[in-house]
Image 1 (cartoon, rainbow, N blue to C red):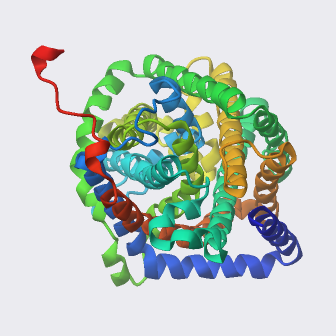
Image 2 (image 1 turned 30 degrees about the horizontal axis):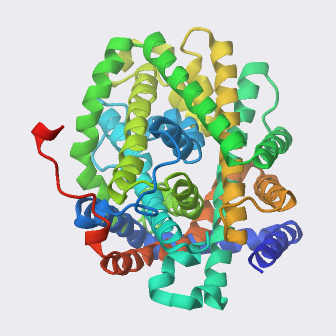
Length: 521
């Protein structure tokens, strides 16, 4: 039932989008405007509440609870665990925004009273970029991941989003309410992944344009979507342990190689100092940014009612939360046997640390190439080259950045391959998880069912890009903000469900034991 209804609604959406793209586009545009204006504060407050709850859960006595039977052990090594959750998470996003977002905030500072291209604008750009893709993004993944791992592995419930609400709904999770929740999660995941596939394919098209001079228009983007969807489907057929694990380890290794190349081929000493300083910049700005609501934007007669954050922070949280059922179940699947404390701090901190270092290297180097402060005046015509490239085409930002480094064509080609593999891991991971949501088990469903979801993700992304044309990115933002609201509300309700589950535990039977003395080691 879950598969049939979800598949039917997906096909209906694609057909209606083809038949009446104008009214559908207007509806999503109006829906996004209403959500951003009236509920933007809810998104921003919500993610902070989730982060506070996760820290409490890990630090409390409930942190000893093992996500599985008492004697269960992790199935994957820490390294494989990290690479799989990261590659299935936001690898594509880091490649897309690693240069584009810092340069965007550097050239158009969102905080009041900050002049573009100054040292303060550079610091703010780094802090805001990491805020968007660091600890808070992984909070949105960690909360549902913890809920899925806890209820699926400890309660032996079906691998579905509805299982998370067992303490609140009891047996009704198997009825119409539970099925409605699962169908909403399937559709939300499908659209969330489609947005990322759209971004990834547009970046690959931009890279091929920079490398070979081909036209990076809609036909090329759709052709790339078709080819890489086929690669993802092949990985889907291979399964989690073979296809997804292999691709995940491969592309995170390639991303690290690319990061070290930029570190040593660029301004190495400047970047090493920048990495250290970025820690202080991020954590000193985090309290202000985490609760910043752009409230004074209403006093701007030229504003749109909610200001800059509506197109950035609220979009990020709405987009990320559509990934949360997918990433949550995927991370839960590969985290069986770990304790709550190990799970929370591992999923929160390890990818956030990598994200911080990534932005410290790519962001600072990009802004130095563009010209920071008084140095900009001495650079002549080369000043502002990256800012102009980002203003012209966001997907082209990373490839314009590489033009300032040696081995330009080789590095650009290497980056295209990384984005392509990140694309494939995101698609195949999502398809396997959507399949789990439909079957309710960790065992792979029929191959044709998994292939259907892999093809559907590429098809939805292609339709949005084709029908939106040059406004493709904006159209994707509008769709994902509207779809993200109900998923956001679902994730919020996971907190009372987890709290009730924790307090039903007999802690004496799940604790590790007394703390050993130092001399006993």
